[in-house]
Figure (cartoon, rainbow, N blue to C red):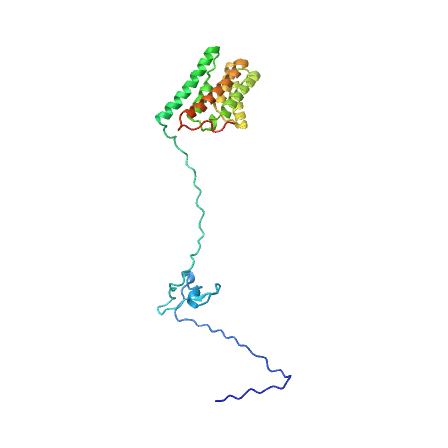
Length: 254
């Protein structure tokens, strides 16, 4: 069958405008659609459909047993859905128990070093006929040789702390006399100044109490107290170098 030729238009004439018709056909299957929770109902697969455009998506084939078929081996599975994870609960730090028992060698080393320095203070006091050994210095020796890493045992607290305690003791003694009430005030004042000066050393509070109650002569007591604290620091430094496994003292000088 021969189709007649289209009639030709005279020159200058305008024909009718072309009409474009777009038809969209949607085919729904007879089987129910699986929910999107499976995660692979629609996914991009360039190897299967021959397209390389990453933004397009291809539907999975529908099998005859209902629902959508599984993706072919050549197509990767869907990315796992990110689940918002709850922040980990804050752990409350547990209170540590008693420190571990030191070895026999470490205990002997600490006890012998502290005893040696206290005997040296007694010998110095006997030589100059002055009581050099006072209870606060015995407590300082115990801190330096048994807990050398604590802030209470560092040279800054040992030396400056005792000087602050002696100064507070003499100040309260001059203002309120040598009573037990005045000694309590001197102890509280010493503790406040130690905190402000960042020189924690609890035996220095006892130095203030001893100064108020015994009222020693400051011209002899203060130099002896200063020399005794320096001797405590030096023996702690030497003792930590004698035994290699001992903690290094001091942790900081100033």
